[in-house]
Length: 153
Image 1 (cartoon, one colour):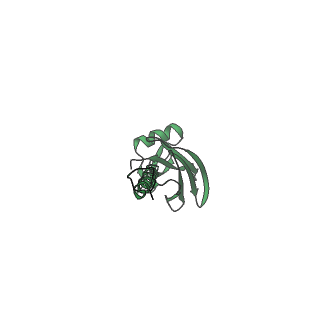
Image 2 (cartoon, rainbow, N blue to C red):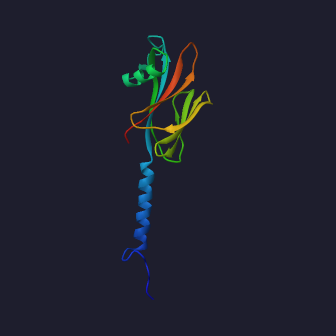
Image 3 (spheres, helix red, strand yellow):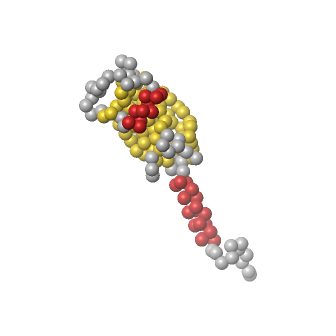
């Protein structure tokens, strides 16, 4: 009996492995490496907490063009990777957490939680070099923000 196989001398195992590897490569390329910064905005010159440091100049410039505060201080910074179809929760402080879902093609959904309650839910694309800003109110005419950016893998 003659076996008919459309791939000539290539075995079925080789074909299956080829497709499995190509699927893994495609899914790996949809992973997003991100950085989240928890930032406190204030008109005060110095923060009460000496552990807080000034936000770098690029982020400060972007925040000042969009927001009203004079100074911005970094509370926390987290680098993480979000795999397509697997939401990632990132704790930024005792009171702040984000959840990022990667839909592929640089499209993400971000949920920002303050004190356990969802404050913001937004879906949009993220591009290298772009900063996405998610904000929540605070007391005493100050505010807190999460600044999200794409990083190198």
